[in-house]
Structures are given as C-alpha cells and as structure tokens.
Amino acid sequence: MRALIVEDEEELARFLARLLAKMGVISDIAQTRGEATELAELASYDIVVLDRRLPDGDGLRAIPDLRRHGADMPILMLTALDDIESRIEGLDAGADDYLPKPFDSGELTARVRALLRRPGLEPDLPISVGRVVLNARDRTVEVRGVPLTLAVRELNLLEALVRRANRVVTRESLVEAVYEAGADVFPNALDANVSRLRARLRELDAEVELTAVRGVGYMLTGAT
Image 1 (cartoon, rainbow, N blue to C red):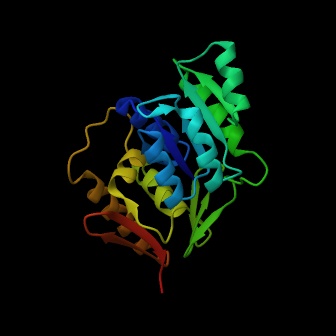
Image 2 (image 1 turned 180 degrees about the vertical axis):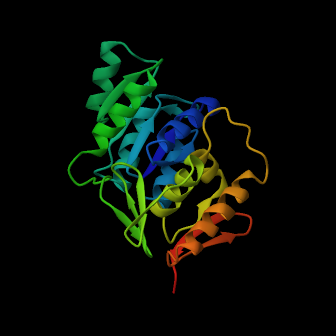
C-alpha cells in the first residue's frame, strides 16, 4: 500500500509517514498542491492525507487534480480548520473523511484503516514474491509454507519491499518504514538490516533477489 501525504510542516509529515509505516503503508510526501499533483501523475496511491493550509493555497483545490489520477483513491483531510462549516466544505469538495488537528494517533490510523477497507481496496490479501508470502492482515511471513520469524525492523523492511516488489524503493522510504519515530539512525544502519534480511532469505532458499540500486535504494524481485 502507498500513501501520499500532502503537508508542509516537515516534522508532522514525517511523523505521519512513520505512523502509516507501522500499518505497512509506504508514504511519499508533498509540501504543496503543485508537488502533490506532480507525484500523483507519476505514481499510483491507495490513500491521500491532505492538509488544507498549504503554501500555494487551499488543499481542497488539489482534490480535482488528484481525482483525475486516482478516481477511487480515498482522501483524508487533516487540518486545523475544525469548525463545522470547514468540515462540510471539505466533504462537499470531495474528501472522504475529515480529521481536525490536533489529532489522536490511534484515531487517525483507525480512520485510515476504515478508508482502505472500501470496496476495491484489498490491503489484507496475501502478497507473494518468489517463495515468500506476506500475510498482510496480521503481518506474518511464510517462506515455502514455513513461518519466518524476524526482528521488528527486518519485518518492517521486508514488508515495505514486498509491497513494492519489482520496483525500486528509495532509502528514505525504507528508513521511514523500518525505524520508529525518534530513533537515531546511523548512516549504515539500513544497509546492515538489508544484509541480515538478505542472508535469512538466502538461507531459506526464498527464490528472491534483494538488490541495491546505487544512490537510490533497494529492490526485491523474484529470482530468475
């Protein structure tokens, strides 16, 4: 699953990305309406978390452009404009849900889960790459039918890669997915996690290849 977070407060945007990563959702971040539209042209998103007060205008004005690139994509407005008139305006503009700031993390993730359960969006189906099967509902992994126990960070890493198999996942996206909020991430920490995960998958003959794309990130593919 992949989310687009449209939020100009960088710290909050990264917090949201880490929060969604715990649900197995990889996020891209845009700080303006223009950036959001550009990203929507390049990638397919399962959900959008959209602020209203953006440097280049009201986030509501981005909804038509976003809809042109993903008509069924749920949009959650997340904004400090919390009066009833603003909520009505947001829903009438095409948002699927509206959550005012400040917000409770548990409520936000519950609302995201509810939006992702809409017909046509099936985040709970198992995902297979090679002989690896990710059971998305309970975040368990099997290799050749045998349960694979991983440390939390290796599990987060594998899930992020499996969900975007056969595509390059940037280092930044993987760091957001793997490490908890506030963690001190050393320069080679991600590479160490990748090495440990690669070794486990080779040991179990998982029939996948976990390769580095220099200067960009990593990619998981079925072995050929």
